[in-house]
Length: 461
Length: 176
Image (cartoon, rainbow over the protein chains, first blue to last red):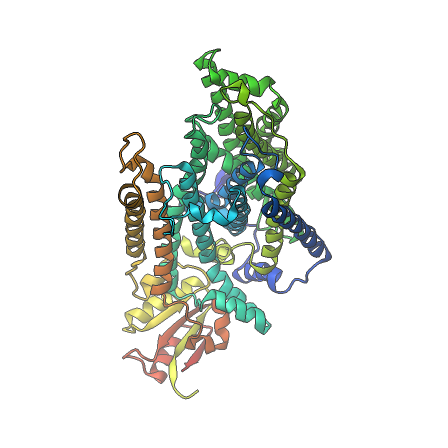
């Protein structure tokens, strides 16, 4: 545990504990598992769940009508053939990145504070990837032919084009989804065994028991388990950096002005982590209040997440500024300068400047420690950042497409109600899954919290 | 409760368990197992377990994934479905790097987890140790050490006396 935060106490450096003092092995076990096994379902939970479930109904309606009528019900047309579907896809995939970053990269860096939020962030990743996955499938226009994307032997004897970034994307996102699921489930196995052993009624005991696969906590089991977990973390680290890189290739490898730029991969990855941490905060702040977990997800966690947001937000700002600089450097007659000029003063100048305000200007309040330690203000800033990151994808997709090289192929894009219903529907789907998750699985990793109790820490010295 | 599968001693802390496991192993018991609610460093070494082949399995999985990824793309793009686009090379390896990487990670990750479960002999819903009533705390806040009857040195009364010398909280019989 080399990387603890230190404070000076009477001139002597002292480690700040990750969780509040007073917890024992038994108390963390009881506290987290009781949320699942004992706590009754509240009216607030039912109301929230039903509200989200009805949004899922809206999603079903929008997608059902889409399958019936085709993509013409959306606002897309030539020249803007990529509309909300791609904007939302990139936004959701980006949100997913924080989960893997927290569980894999911070695990390798031995940041033990991550133990309080990794489970939760991994679940968020999975649900975000699910929401993202909806869009490419419905975007292809003829979804019953979506299998053409996969290298499946078929009677037409045709194969996918492996030199296309769109196909790389299929592999990157499906690998990411699979590995995230496996990572999450592997982390859950010891906790499922705890739930099996604490369940008092037969049905939960059977379900958790089956999912725990007979985990007994043997020393040999733990030894191999830790090896596998470390390897997964090591493999996920380049994976998480590659996913949004590949997503950015969908744009950067084309020759469209506004897309064809080498800064895209790093700035997409930074933006993904930026929005992902914003989503982690948006979920963690209410959950720690409602389920009384302020002693496990402490102000220190919120503070650290806010610092990550601030840092990645500055990388994003650098990306924006570099785009403008490169256009200026290309000269006033270049198509790049035209693109930038069109962003500043064109028909979509509103979203563009809103993007600057949401993503760059407002988040600068995170420099102030009092803001980073105020859950309410952090929640608001996170909402602003998530909106800003959505606007960023809107600016990249729509603004680049609506002004092509030839003025005859200029056009505008206006989202229809079906676009909005699909977008809102996936937010409902995401939140509904979160509502279910906090009730049926331990939202904080119990065995990793045990490792943070004084009883376990004494052992490590 | 006819045959005896082993004897299980219960401890209150990880350091007590590690000490007890070391002594038991040194005293010549080999078929022993320690149980803890979280990974305890040094515990598997204390019971004489060092070899861990998960890394090797992961490496093999990753290499298989790498070959599969590149092989698939090469076979499709250069052999079975070649497309001549302005005379560009069919084996355009830079474009194949990404999917090769993705399948390396995918196969390596799945192999690591599958290998871990396989070597751990999981899934295994039933095990005699689950018959010990206190054992449900092995996944919560207690630490256990079990000496199995299969060990050549095992002798019920003598082993029980030995375990009592380790000052456990309790000793239970693991029924067959």
